[in-house]
Length: 312
Length: 303
Image (cartoon, rainbow over all chains, first blue to last red; front, side):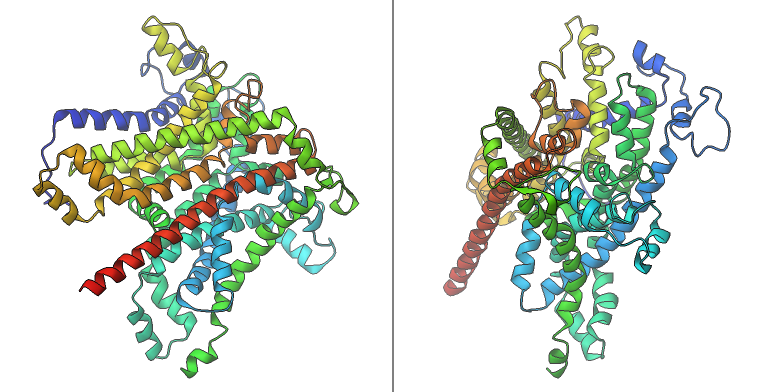
């Protein structure tokens, strides 16, 4: 990169660049700054950057996981720590499952000719456009009434032991219920993106592995997967982003114990008197993981985005 | 060859887990929804206890003024958002398609708005639009103007602006990628023939990028119908029905009015609309591939 030469540009271009960067990042920075202000400072609005930064908002937000008592409040009403843990479990597990299932399916669609391949590929493409709102009604109905396992059966107990949840062992209200719909929702997208990466893997490599006596699974896991790592990274980030940020389906499916962070934020926003400082601190905490991913892996994200759109 | 026959089952093994999940949690629910949309369905009821009402839900909706308004708002939102974003995104990409220092930083910072939770985006903009403490009104007042009632009188416009902020970078980045993969030879040839900047854009760059642009546009349009959280947090659909897009109305019909049958029928309307767009995109892709194949064949024959 360092020996790359750059064209000389008119200064106006750099002004435009600066303005664009300011517009893109401004609101985020504003929220970041405000999350360190007391509500009094936010409302009086004295001097943009002249204020005494305080972590009180973050303390209030995280009150259920802090190890020390807070002076400024007597009762911890915001269960942010628990919601954060729920979000993390749901996002990580569903990302992992989506990736594993998605790359296997993408491989099958790209490399094999089999009966039903066209149907599978077309269906995958079609369901990609289904909005979460459309899934709301059936998922609510099914997860509450039909996808239930008798309390006494072995599978039912196993699920309850693994993921928690209380009462009936219906999918609604459990982590696994939310994970299931997230995996299903993200699979078409992941398959779509990964297909365009798998196509680029040279056939000769797989042939060589086959000559050496590797079976299809060894070829897939030991030869193909390592090559498409960048694609996997992109797909992982996109899946994580959706599972981490989604609100609607999680709000329909979760109960008191399985609430995720977006639900918490929306619930606190709809109150009459919004506590801006605290809510911005929670928003910032929710935004930090995706921001970190973006800064670390922007190249992969951009590749994934273009691969998904251009290859159709 | 023997190995290939023995492994005939392999693709199915690879495909099966994903297929099972998608059938259980995507296709079956969709079928369930279509079935439920023909029934008078209350959340407390099991679907087998509900009464079959035929097309009643669909007909009620069709003549329901608030559904029509909500459909109108959705279309207005989706179309204006995509139109502005396409113009801005493509314009910026054409303008910034230069070899400048800092381009990669710009791209990185540009994808931030897309990666942040819609709920948080709504939260940020709701703060900035706030009538008294919000950034915009404070700025307007500091230069001596009257504040604007952003989320009141101009709610739809404000929501559109927030979406443009969030998603213009998507189009910018895809267009930039397309621009940078254009065949250099065509551009060189145009330069030698003395084509100016605008002529290059109009006659070479835009036509060559058209396939990508159309796919991008349709993708964005499909996504614009999915927007929900940003609007929910900013306005909750109000004031009145002025920003109540279909997705929001579905969720309200299901949770507040407790009419799952009607909500299912509404979901079906939305789904049909999106299906139309997807089929359009699919057909376009097919035509494009066929044309590319034909062109390639023609070139080979000439050789």
